[in-house]
Image (cartoon, rainbow, N blue to C red):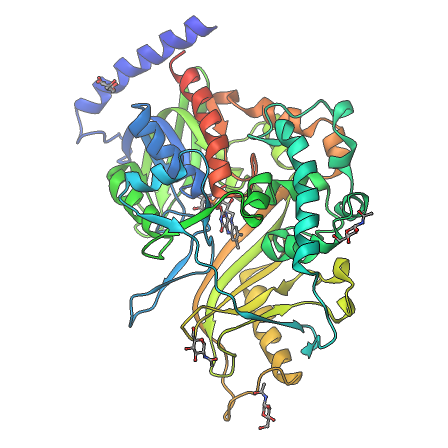
Amino acid sequence: MRKEFLTTLALSGAVLTLADGKGKGKGENNDGTRTIYRDVAIIGGGASGSYSAVRLREDYNVSVVVIEKNSNLGGHVNTFIDPVTGRGFDCGVQNWIELGGARAFFERFGVEMQPIVRSTFETVSVDFTNGQQLTNYSPPSAADRTAALQRYLAVAESFLPVLEPGWWTFPQPQNIPADLLLPFRDFVAKYNLTAAVPTFHATTGFGIHDMMGHLTVWFMRSFNVNLVRVLLGIETSIVPVSRKNQDVYDRILTSLGPDALTSTTVVSTEERSSRRGVTLIVRNSATGVKTRIVAKRLLYTAIPSEANTSPLDLDREEKSTLGQFDYSASYVGVVSHPSLPLNKSLVNIPISAQPANWPEAIPQYPYNTRFENYADSSYFRLIAVGDQTFTAAQAKKVIEDSFDKLVEGGVVNQTSPAQRLTFHKFEPHGLVSAYVTKEKLEGGFIQRLNGLQGRRGTWYTGASWGVHLSTSLWVFTDTVLERLVGDLRG
Ligand SMILES: Cc1cc2nc3c(=O)[nH]c(=O)nc-3n(C[C@H](O)[C@H](O)[C@H](O)COP(=O)(O)OP(=O)(O)OC[C@H]3O[C@@H](n4cnc5c(N)ncnc54)[C@H](O)[C@@H]3O)c2cc1C
Ligand SMILES: *[C@@H]1O[C@H](CO)[C@@H](O)[C@H](O)[C@H]1NC(C)=O
Ligand SMILES: *[C@@H]1O[C@H](CO)[C@@H](O)[C@H](O)[C@H]1NC(C)=O
Ligand SMILES: *[C@@H]1O[C@H](CO)[C@@H](O)[C@H](O)[C@H]1NC(C)=O
Ligand SMILES: *[C@@H]1O[C@H](CO)[C@@H](O)[C@H](O)[C@H]1NC(C)=O
């Protein structure tokens, strides 16, 4: 099998060289579609796709092409640049946990990094459904919160060997630790973590559907050991000195040159197998131009939603495995309005959380999480979240409604004449936080997901396969790249 595979690759290599050099314009086929040849085609140029492209090209001497739907790389990184001052305001990814080779990776591209600078704004708790300020709400004390985070850390560390990197060593269904299958509410009760609930929610928990009812295993996917260590001051998070998180991805885009196809998606798949490699037809949405990509292997990094995977000619096993995922949806933006208070963070907390009912301090989907002022500016960050049916139009409406409620509740005074919010940036992350039910995990879902790795010439990384934090995902991605390159080289 292995030998046969090698022969096929060698043979196709020879044929490809001929086809590439002769006849029509370089690489042009009978149908006029330009054909390009690479070792690996990468779908998605966000955190894991961009990282993979750089490492494969520069560290493994493997040729790549990145197929990215957006006009830039970086995925959830969204930097708004003030047109007057040139200053950057990040409304997506805020910072990166300094793990493994993360800092060196940025420095490869000359992006100088520094520890995060936290602003210490006054937080105003408001129920965004009715605009009522929570005047009788006490958040947990710093000491109680820290103690609870330490307890969480101890338990989460005990699961590290089965949760990271990725799912490689996740136990068989009958051996999944019972704690990981508890609804998070029960896990919180078991380990006395109530005092950390507002922190869980405000940091990453808003991104997962019904955080308290969600399985603990999925909660730990976005609130992992490294994140707790950062919150406890044991590890650090870093940001570019330029304070523009997009910088590194812009430089990666420049460095990749013709190896990055932006504004591009796959329209059809002519071939996808371990023996014959992968042939994709991709199309640039701006120019309409199609390109044929002939690659030995495919690395899939985008969210494996039905819309994203339908041009890939999924077989039954792929469809029935990837189709089991459910998601949340996330939208971020930068707004301004003369009535929004400077140096304050208005956060959305249900009135029922008063006086100190922390497990209730979580709004129901869909909702806007906050209007958070950026230091020394009149811009505000917001994040709207909902279930997988939540659209961009609905998200904008939820945000505008939340502002109207602030006015109604007297938390802000509307201008006269009344003005609407000004959106300076609005970025649809779309589907995030893949998860499946307990029944599916107990039915061997993770084993089936792992079974797709390397199958039909296709490897997978990205948040649906690992932790929902960029640099932890890079550590996982390293383990996928090792296997992918091993596969490529037989
Ligand atoms: C609001 C928010 C804040 C966050 N803050 C942080 C943070 O501060 N630090 C941190 O480490 N992590 C943060 N994260 C998590 C982090 O963004 C993710 O873990 C990381 O981006 C996941 O990387 P990825 O490669 O899986 O996906 P992404 O980075 O989302 O990349 C996927 C890419 O695929 C592209 N794509 C989608 N569909 C297609 C298609 N059909 N064809 C081609 N391309 C396609 C997308 O445009 C995107 O560029 C945050 C997430 C959210 C939602
Ligand atoms: C990288 O790969 C190319 C093409 O396969 C080959 O010609 C070259 O020698 C390789 N370089 C290194 C440093 O291995
Ligand atoms: C539970 O946590 C709270 C706050 O962190 C703490 O005051 C209390 O002593 C803890 N209770 C137990 C039984 O550990
Ligand atoms: C906000 O804080 C800055 C210092 O960072 C201060 O100069 C400014 O006056 C404050 N503005 C308001 C409205 O409180
Ligand atoms: C709104 O205006 C009223 C009347 O001028 C004033 O009393 C109140 O303090 C203002 N509220 C805010 C949040 O600015």
